[in-house]
Image (tube, rainbow, N blue to C red; front, top):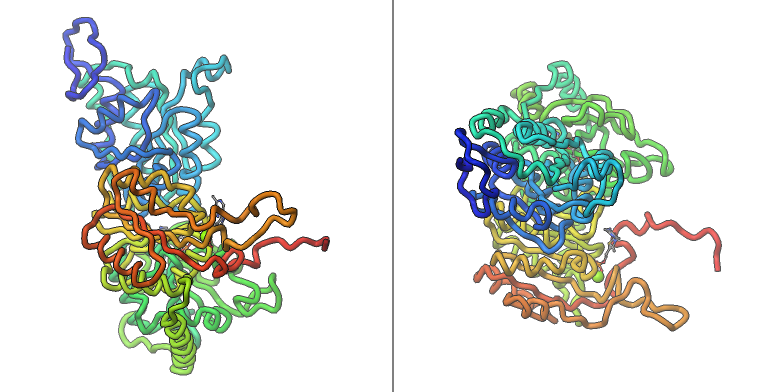
Length: 585
Ligand code: ADP
Ligand code: TZD
Ligand code: MG
């Protein structure tokens, strides 16, 4: 008897049989390989330790993390960057739960990801008899993901993997859970039957063509607009329809606003970008076309003062076109006058066709008014960026990052924090699609190092991470992972001694305030422990030198940028979301 695929630590020798045999371990690996999965992000332990070894032996890249949450975030963003489901592999119960935040995050952000988790023995779990790492994982995962499956028999592995892939990438992408109980891995079946049971998924994310009526309706609405606006969201970035999206914007001459992760879909320096006039265009626009962007909190739910409404519940006067793959998205917050349902590539192509030749560009009063505001704000920003205060503030430090990203437009920018996030988003221009990855729909802290690893591994490009000192703490231990795999990642910590600021004090005088950290911490020294490069930068010149060297050498680098601890504001740009105490002291 022989196992179909040679691998380390193959199953123990079975009694002689006339047929070649295989097992669950090998079938899982073959099913993933057959479907073009080349990387797995995970953390070993019972019952998947051998699976990680055999995956590696089979040629699939296994990136082993220090905490499953970071492996999960890595998988989620690998899905966004590649349109293939990112795979995260965890052990049972606690490992599974650690990965679950990332699975929910992937679902919320519409990123295709599969959390593959080993689990304990079904009959013990179901009778709650106290197995090692006992937990009914399938039931717990279900409400947090797009789909969840469990495979009990080796001959069903092919179907399980195929269903997970389809669920993750088709329609609106999302997180999928795949439960693989320990016993499955050593189940032996005949190799021929095993091979036969595998499925190579055909057309995993089929194009979804919008109806001609919906396209006509949308184009008519746009044609009648006096003050049209296009909002590009991360769905548009995900769709990889970059050339057509650019043509749509340029051909129509309509000003556009990129959402955070859509920055760079067209270069931020594009003359039609209305980013620097956001607070002017949102209330003023008469027709807004959303492309892969939801009217959630990030767009103030399409109503309220941001949109020219009288108060926080009132709608403005805008009419909306919404291009989205999910037919349920329209009308989620305000009326959508022209939903266009389909994949963005097909929708934008259909819109371009309908627009045809001889399109009348928007009136000069509209584009001129935007340009005026924009120029004023850009000039104001340039003035701020030119200042060189001591100690550094966010702007003077980010002016350096801005220059380095401009000089290295293929680098991927990872960004999290509050002020560290908001200032970076507005100061650092992006020039190419899918180069900015950040806290996403939840404004989640902790994506940082997982995203760095995935971005470096899947794209091979230089990665630059701009991290709040608090934000970094959520995934900081993964700098060991970055050093271990020798990834070209340059981490810049905007160290203002705390969450939002470093100046709070405990009114009773007993403890440090909840928002502050050790003063003048030297995050750069963490790198010494793992053989990476650590630099303390107290001035823009020091920061520039260290970043240039990091990018030149492609060595794992962590720069502790010393930022004025008084510089930030509460929650950055979203101070208003903090509930105010009704009872005054
Ligand atoms: P942002 O945060 O940038 O505003 P959202 O995450 O709110 O973006 O919105 C992304 C939208 O894009 C989701 O509604 C999702 O259904 C949609 N989407 C994702 N991929 C595609 C695609 N390939 N084609 C069409 N719509 C897509
Ligand atoms: N926990 C998680 C998982 N996500 C969150 N968003 C928060 C907590 C709350 N939070 C924010 O929204 S921003 C932030 C926290 C803790 C950190 C801000 O501090 P920072 O950035 O040092 O990262 P700045 O530059 O000091 O503002
Ligand atoms: Mg901070």
